[in-house]
Length: 245
Image (cartoon, rainbow, N blue to C red; front, side, top):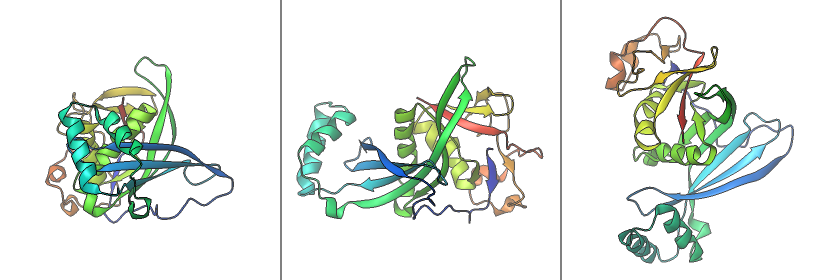
């Protein structure tokens, strides 16, 4: 159910729509801008019935006619301390979007996830089931910013069933930095365990990741933060990570 690390070659093909046995409909469009940047992105979400994943979100980097003018407008709005949300609205309302030159930079798949919150009341959010970010954008932290937007939209975002080393590092680092506190949740006991800390373990020492059989040797890891990670033999398949609004 949760964070088992798998090989870096793992990938889910999000270049195609899910296999369909039912209908689908466009369910949401959400525009946003990354703090301290002048690029505007659009999340276009489609909801599928009886498909591999309930939701597929395609993320576009928007293009505009007279891009220099758009950048100047964004800078002026920020000098006037206009919120990023209002900056995006104002730029879109200018009607200068160049739809022919917008490009897809990421795709995400996610499903509904129901759990008990810290007051033991039923809550729901979206569980990531697949993620792809253009390699040229991944190093700029775009994935974390998109996750931040999904948290704002849905209130709770839950990690994927399985993660690569880089996906785990995203949750242990970037998401905590840009989206908020990340908590460890036990799906079997249906309760929160503890907060994830700077060392990618719980604040009281809980180990939320196991080392799956897909990675038989620690030396295969490429990120230094994982080389001496205190993995346990027991499975963490019943554990997920939750970031909330």
